[in-house]
Length: 323
Image (cartoon, rainbow, N blue to C red):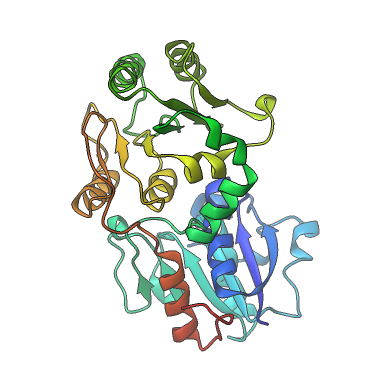
């Protein structure tokens, strides 16, 4: 089995993508959280002068032989480490970097960047969305782990809430529009709501939606105070999913379920995010929040195919039974 280092800055979304690829490749993964300090953090991964000093001494101990056969990084902070490992190991460690590192692509063996990033290069793989573990087996495990959700009235509507980001303001007007659409759909369809907020979800959004769902059966998860995160169960048991427009990861994972997925946009999205939304809509994986859309012809599941291409290009063997 191939040894690999999975390197991120600790952000949940970055870890999820890197670990999903590692799992699909069937490698023996060691997880490292590496956050460079200034000035390297300001210019990562472009600034490499003295980069062995980019991390505290206790962290640098981890960047030592024996080198793994593969390093998988996600995010610009990790890109500094994956670029450096390629040099330190004299090419023995192959580097795969997820997301646009904002540096010349020649510094990595392979890069994986979603199409809306418009990154070009012969060593660039371009899925539509983000990498993730959601497939038939993952959904079956989610149903088994949260079997009690089967008793909730159908249709079960999963509501996944992210938070504001640059160019996407989930403000009072957006919250009011979301609540109005939720009420209209519940009045039309009935059923239950499975709500999952993130660490970025504004308290006003959680409170407003919570008030609107008073008396509606379902699940409400707003944070650790509500117990373990039921996210896999929400996606596994949902008949329909509504996702806030900000999160490429959540939209990608919702599109992998095979059920109708909706979002609410009230103002133009930033260009890269708008391109991603457009690709999902063109493929039948995303619709407006009030649309009465059907399930897509095929769920959007790209991780296995990307892993197969990575293995092919780098000469690694996939685990038995993988594509």
